[in-house]
Length: 136
Image 1 (cartoon, rainbow, N blue to C red):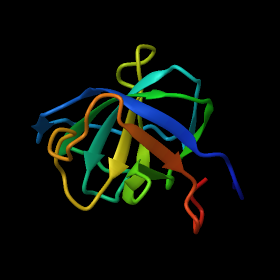
Image 2: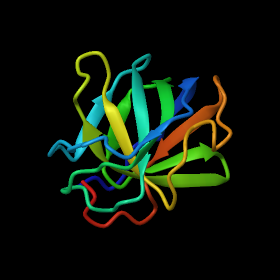
Image 3: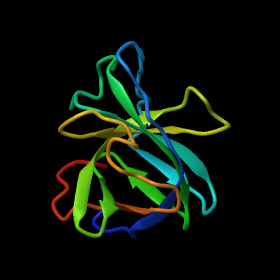
Image 4: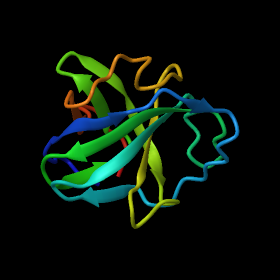
């Protein structure tokens, strides 16, 4: 288990305005994924906290470019600004690999990137939570 790791900075390169109730998403068994600087991955949001069940209802946030390399871990926090913890990383889906990976975030409500007011070039942060019991 990690005791510390660096924050990963990114910026939105595309913002979505759609959601689905029939996604049939099955998360991979991996607890961590490494990202390289410059990689672009897709972010989805769901309300479930159960990473083992099939996830049908998702909102699409958008595609984010990582500005530095790092490790994303289940339980990490996704921050949409310096003051706004959006949700926690629930898991990863590799349906579209090697093109891109889906990073699935658990949040209180499901909406889209446009619904959250995201815009291209807006920064986001993936941060190790202050208290992270058993997340990696």
